[in-house]
Image 1 (cartoon, one colour):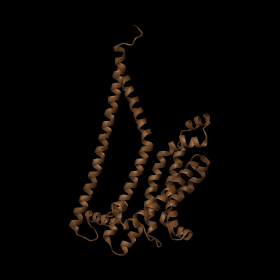
Image 2 (cartoon, one colour; image 1 turned 180 degrees about the vertical axis):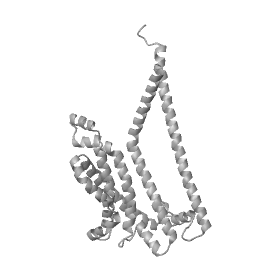
Image 3 (tube, rainbow, N blue to C red; image 1 turned 90 degrees about the horizontal axis):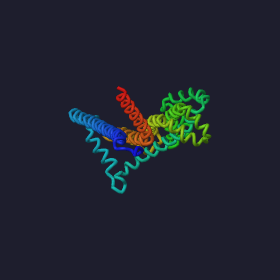
Image 4 (cartoon, rainbow, N blue to C red; image 1 turned 180 degrees about the horizontal axis):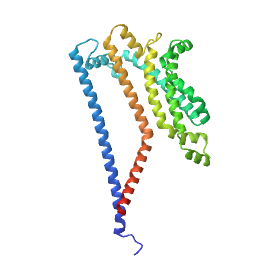
Length: 312
């Protein structure tokens, strides 16, 4: 029959599908190898840095510069040698780490909600953006410690003052980056949304937020680091009875240098873990679309190369 497909007519299509599959498998394997190699190199650099620190501290023998092994052992005994039922946290950890994390989490969530909400409103109105941009840039440039006396007068010492200082200084990176991301939304997509008569909530959910999401996460990462710094700074002030900053001040007053170093290492580890978690959330929310764009681009390039090969 002339209409029935023959074995020869199916062979080019099958060969093209197999080639694309092999290309995708090879690309995935290469990407996995690159990620594994990068992770191994990062851990190797960390091990080398800790080894150099350990050797230098042991050679110097100064009480002001303890080796990292001694600092880690002291931090474990101080905070992480508790019972299993309390997640290995000691009473000192409950009084030191958990209150600080609670203040920082509350300040970060408030800054994120206010920053994203106001950033969308300001970014979608050119007139509002032109009017508010000088004020936003001025407020962002203010050093956070200089505002603490103002918050002390308004809120007095305590948790409200600490939260106010964290939120006021951490909200600006989120707000400005969200406004910039909302302004970068494709006008053609907005015109299509107007033709389809999407509601304001639908345009926000399906157009504005996805378009601004990379810039939002850039602002959130900056805000997270600011929240950690301001959390410690606010706990250094009088009127604080717990927290990491209070533990640092107390250790300095007692000349407990080992605890001072343990607090500094704890802050670095918390910053790394929190940033890693935020990056994982960002990758989960935005990585799928970027992967799809890269896959489409590779498919287009492979088709272009095949057409060039056939033409030659």
